[in-house]
Length: 145
Image (cartoon, rainbow, N blue to C red):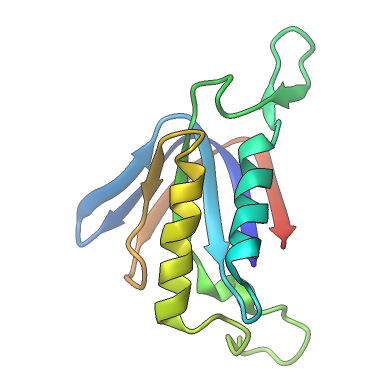
C-alpha cells in the first residue's frame, strides 16, 4: 500500500462536473492498494495516518499537531497509478496494483477506519476525477506500508 499525504488548506474532487468530496482543512490522501495488501495493512496504515502530527503548532512554529487538534478532515482519493515504481521503461505498468474489486473494498474499509478520528470525504473509485488540491506549506509525504 502506498499513500501520498498532502496537508491541505482547501481541496475538492469533481466527477461529471459535480463536487463529490471537499475539505477546507486537513489531509488529502492519494491511496494505492497493491498485491499482498490485506486487512492488517489497512489497520496499520489508518492508525499511522490518524496519529500523524503534521500540522503547525502556533506556539513553536513546528509540526506538532494532529488532525483532531486542528479540526481537520480527510479527503481520500483512490490512486492506482502510484503502484508503478518507475524503475523500468518509460511507459507505466500497473501490474502491482491490487485487482479493482478488492482494491475498492479495501479503500472503503480504509475510509471507515479513518472516520474513527475525523470526517472523511472521498472521490469516486474507478472514475475519472478532477482533483484540486491547495497544498499547505507545501507539505507532502509519501508512505509505504
